[in-house]
Length: 426
Image (tube, rainbow, N blue to C red; front, top):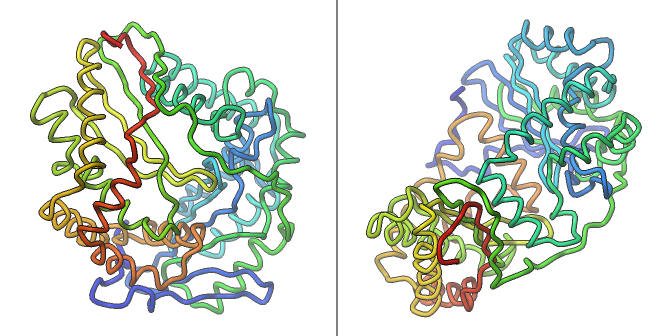
């Protein structure tokens, strides 16, 4: 669905209205009548990191159940109501937040908002639905049991975050899933689905006054305060270690990482540029050129900045033949060292900044993308002005900045590495 793109020549921030409802709920609204659609995205802080010990997967199961029957609708009736009105409604969770999205034709918005309300405020959490959704998650986990990418990600997570909520699997495991009860789900629902730190973005054919009334109706009955368990900050562990998971496959899946930078760090935009040069750019990145183009070691290799609320990381991955895994890692680590010690060239910096600023508009070419971006900005603690300032901050990164930040970000090049396969020479 393409609509409502924020014209790049205009101030993006000026298209955003801050809507504060009589009940005190705040949302960012981009009001547009180009097409008769309304898209809403929201997030509440506290996701899988709030799963109690031994109950991994609880938040994911809860998110999966919110559209499986609520209020007067059993699961079948709820899905029929959504389908009959062409409404898109769904929920999900990651490590730090539980979230939801809704899209509807504006003529069906009253019904869509009401379905969202009952899903959040009156979920049935019936045992039959619990068993069905639990079975779907378990089926996915069983498929992952021999998937190199899933195994390498698990090994990396467990090594990086020992005895920390980030070390637990977001979807749980087969054992923890069996331990999840309806009482567990209801208790987590009361803790997580609240109005405190609720972030909402709406894009489409609706005015501020109408939206304010709808938001109070949808979210107003939720508890005012969450009851989140504090999650401690953590630095990535086991730098310099290699964890190998023996798997009889011809290719090794590789995951590597080291500390990154949080979004409010003064050097963050320099880090964005440096990462793009290292492994963020598809065809121009050093890792891509050195690992794939020059040596043909891997079909894909990448890096990206990953900012959890309590841990910032620079992570990456690749897949290569078992007999070339050692060489691939040596090339990857050599690129880390070279960029840290020598920094990028002026040409690399120029190309990275042009790509990063020129491609930013692509994040705003649909209603759902815009709403999602606006919710993420709120979660990260930015004001709407960030939309106008972001490209300027990228452009302001000088060659001296990039070289200094490269040294800081990549440091001594020490990586935590996990490998799934039968890598030779490691």
